[in-house]
Image 1 (cartoon, rainbow, N blue to C red):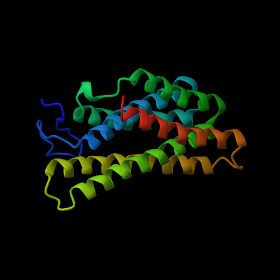
Image 2: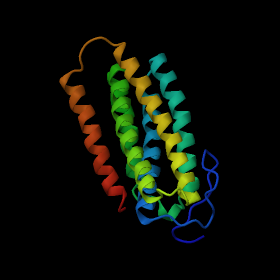
Image 3: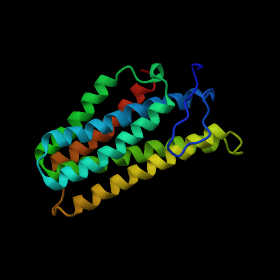
Length: 200
């Protein structure tokens, strides 16, 4: 397998061949996607490790299964040597991003997931739009297959965001200052992590 090659995944992306090179920008994007999905799995594991709320645990268990599927799909695309060398850091950060709000309560959990998934929606949208610009003639099957996968993943993440937002609305009252600062920090931290992941 060549340095810039990808392995055909099974989820919604038939047509990606074993020796289909991708532009360096997309390889960097896939590295951030892999790190992000790794972190997402750990977010839900962190929630489940701490929360004893039955509704929160059902929410986290269902989303964990979906995120594990996402991670497996990205892992089939990206050879191990192309993945971020900081995966232990992203795992720890993800676990804490789930565990800390789980100690506070359901409202904090749902606000956290809404913030995370809002960022992920934008992140996947940027990649999808980049492929549109790169392959406007729709002539490159591997790019189209990758875009189809990203669209599928994005759809799941939007569903997670909307579910979290709806559950958050069930908990009356405006968000506290601490919660607003926490969700803002999630957005900033996610952007910084992506910039780092593109290089390391």
